[in-house]
Image (cartoon, rainbow, N blue to C red; front, side, top):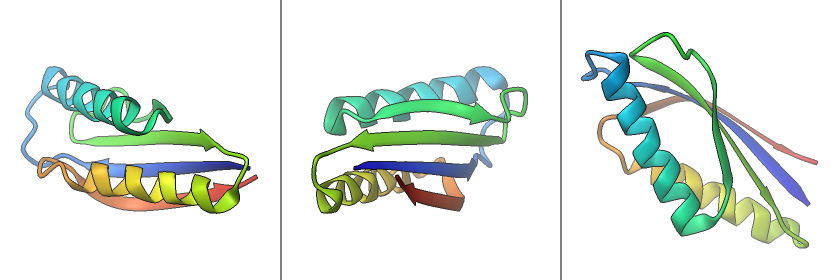
Length: 92
């Protein structure tokens, strides 16, 4: 089972692309270290207050894959600098 999520976030306190990239790197590292999910920035590369992150996990059990993605969303929500605005989760 493959579960894929696209997460759009706003960063209201960021004032540069450098700050945005630093925050995205922290999120990326924490997600990979804690959950071993694939993470990438999908869109809004040139905007410093907005991002779209893609997450993917693969498991032999659909329940486990969904739990991993939900935990990844909780980790993203744990960053006070980010506000998750639109989330789309898809199972394949």
